Structure formats: C-alpha cells, structure tokens
Image 1 (cartoon, rainbow, N blue to C red):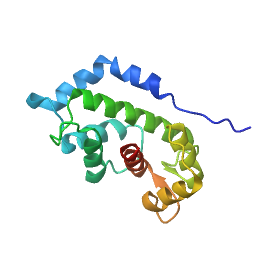
Image 2 (image 1 turned 90 degrees about the vertical axis):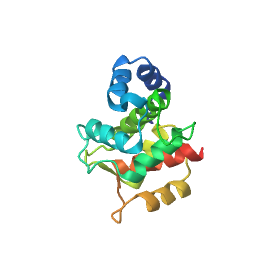
Image 3 (image 1 turned 90 degrees about the horizontal axis):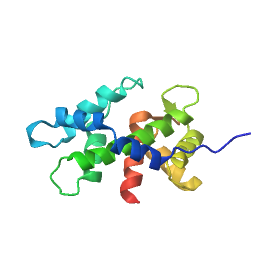
Image 4 (image 1 turned 30 degrees about the vertical axis):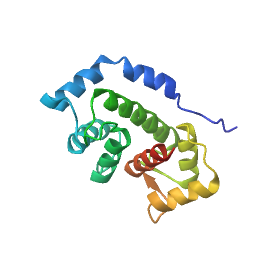
Length: 159
C-alpha cells in the first residue's frame, strides 16, 4: 500500500522562524551589511547541504534564482527575514527530495519527481511533470538535488 506522504510546510516554517541558531548563522555570514548576496548564499548552502548530499554544489544560476525569488526590496541580496523564508523553503524541498529518493542515489526519476513535488505542496498534472523532467533532468531521465531545487524555485516563483 503506497501512502501519499507530505512534508508539513507549516511545521517547518515555525521551527525555522523560532530557531535562534539560524539568526546567529545569518549574522555570521552576512557581515556588516546584514545581507547575503548570491555568492555568500552559494557558500553557505554548499557547506550546509554537502553534509547530507553527494553533489557538486549549488550553481550560480540556482543561487541567483533563490535570491531573486525572495528579494522584495530588489537589492540583489537577502536580509534576515528573506533568508529565513528561503531557509524554510529549502528545508521543505530537501525533506521532500530525501523522502522520495528511496534508493539514496541523489537523483529522482520522473515518478519520484512528481511525488516529491506533490509532497512539497505542488499539485501538477502529468504534462507539467514531464515538461519539468525534460527541462531539469538529465539524458538518463534523472533529476539531481541541485536541479530539483532549481525546479522548486521556478515553480514557487511562477505560483
């Protein structure tokens, strides 16, 4: 029996919002201007997520897209509030990816992609899921963690 699992975004958001370690972490990385640009974000995310995944790290495009998604003041950087929102999204996406990467390969097939996106709160039909796999997947029909995050960022931006 296949149970449809879902990551609980509300619980993740509350945990992140109240986690003082994230605020301290942000202040250590942000420096005097108290904002993080895409390069600083890339460094932080690579350090944090390479502990859990075997991957080359987040690309420049993914990091710039994450900043653009939440940069409400158009500064090209993320302040604390924007960073906390991004961190909440990243935890949800990471948990969804891990939940459906059942073989621990660090990649999702098209069936797993649909389940992972559904778990993260995106209800997509087969046509859209196939288009996402063609856009973000590799020639072998697999999508990596980095590409899954890019896909999730683009979906959130469009919705």
